[in-house]
Each structure stands twice: as structure tokens, then as C-alpha cells.
Image 1 (cartoon, rainbow, N blue to C red):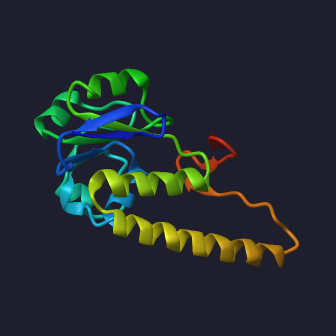
Image 2 (cartoon, rainbow, N blue to C red):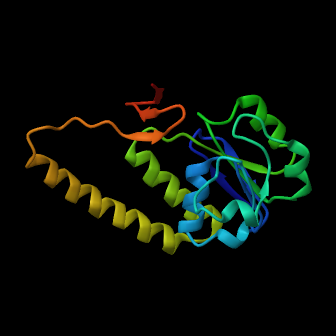
Length: 175
């Protein structure tokens, strides 16, 4: 039995390396693919649109706020990946009856890096996770140096359209 902590410091107990993953967070689904875990993903949301063809291969289990618990249970996942902003506490409690649940809480780039490394450890792809984290660190430093050369240092980062959404300091803002 291995014990991990998620980003809310909740305990996650796993008997073995997770081989069947349900992801209820679009950005984290994309990360799983980048980590080399495409084959282990068995369920995704209707909003998991990247990579483009992934939804054709995987079972759609609903949206991020309204999932079909029966569909998730039928997939017999080893772990279900959630997010504090995307999924409700009630949903997480119900999902824990099905499988281990990891809840992310990403507000900063450092939180993202922590999540990448957590997934690497929990899902058995630490080398891939470290490689991605190192690349992000390098690019982040390069970006900081480039930004020092520019007169304007404010940006808006659009993450979704219809409705348009912009990443804020600690949350997402719809406009």
C-alpha cells in the first residue's frame, strides 16, 4: 500500500500503480497524454478536447460539473483525477466510493509544477514528469528574461471562448 497526498493535502491510498485513469479536468487530461499515459486513460469529460482525437477513443463520462457516476464506475478506474475549481466537494465524496481520487488545486506555475511531479510519482512516470518540469522551468526563466526587455508587462491570458474566460491571479474570470 502506497500513500500519497493530493494538492488539498488529502490522503490517497493505492494498492498498486494506477492503470485505469478517469480524468475530469481537461488540462490534466492533456498533461496525462504528455506524460505518456494515453493508453491508461479510460474516461474523460466532454470538455477534454485536446488532443483532438482523444474523445473518439475514450468513454465520455459527462462534463466537469455533472458527471455520470454509473459510467465512471463501469470503467473500473484505479484513480480519478479532479480539480478544486472544476469539481464539487459532493462530487469528490461520491467518486471516492468508486476509486481513489486526486484533487488538484492549481493557482500558480509552482502549483502546476508540483502537480506534474505528483502525477509522475503516483502514476509511475517520474522521469517523464521531471523532463516536462525541467523544460517548463527553463522556458519560464527564459520568459522572465525576455519580459525584462519589454516596456509593457501586463498580459491577458485567454483560456476558453464561448464564453470568453481569462486566467486571473487566483481564479478564472468570465468576460
